[in-house]
Amino acid sequence: MNFTGANAIYQQIGNYVCENILRGTWAEGGKIPSIRELAVSIEVNPNTVLRSYNLLKEKDIIQDRRGLGYFVAGDGVEKTRRLLTDEFVTGELPRVFRTMDLLRLGIEDLKSHYLKYRREHQRTERSES
Amino acid sequence: MNFTGANAIYQQIGNYVCENILRGTWAEGGKIPSIRELAVSIEVNPNTVLRSYNLLKEKDIIQDRRGLGYFVAGDGVEKTRRLLTDEFVTGELPRVFRTMDLLRLGIEDLKSHYLKYRREHQRTERSES
DNA sequence: CATAGTGTCATAATAAACTAAGACACTAAG
DNA sequence: CTTAGTGTCTTAGTTTATTATGACACTATG
Image (tube, rainbow over all chains, first blue to last red; front, side):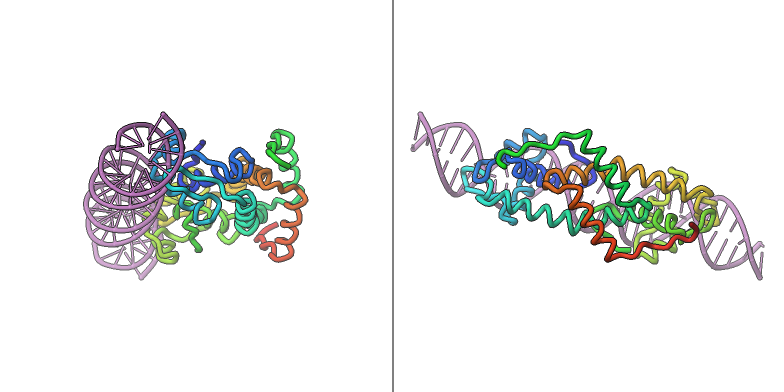
């Protein structure tokens, strides 16, 4: 985990979990790291991880079974994809376009930066297609 | 001012100032609202505005004249444009592209959302071209 | 010189995020 | 039953951003 300092840690942990679900690293219905386990591995207080997990539990992305741990929901991938896509399209993209407007950048600039990024980064594999 | 709660207020004030400079609302070399004045108008503590102004002063975007107030630097527009463009291209865009990757969105999706945004929003006028 | 408007600084108080430490209840496995 | 690994909760302390006040120095204006 690389914490940015820009956002709250519990939110960044939430993103970390969502990424692992979307990438298929953590399978649907499968167990995810326990609160204490994750807290130790990313050097953070268990209470902070608990807060992140609670957030995702409310959104039905993960479920808890007392005494056992947390598990990815059966439809966790779809739930996560829907949620993040919605946040991205209605929240982040408009802000990006607004900044582009302010800086006088057009779709061509955006595209060239994207292509440059594509050249320099491998697309991650997905467990199932 | 619409504060997001996501970022710190003093950063949002900084963005607000940069926007007014880039849009030409506040001319190069011209006076900008005094600390107390801006603090009252956006209902924020003067110390918070001071912090924002200090940040922009360090970046040579604005200058202070004791007893008179703050003024946009002579090359304020260029300085601001360079700074924000750099932050956008090296900081924000890579994060956006990474999220797109995660959500399996391509350049076509990006373009269509951009065009939709363009249809719904007027590009702001600039004082000088 | 007096005044009003400016930037600057110092101190204290508040709120939110995070940390620290420990206690309790639940579950599976020996 | 005992144990180890879980989630949950409480209380207290720390850090950072922000607010609240007030004071001081500077500048233009009358």
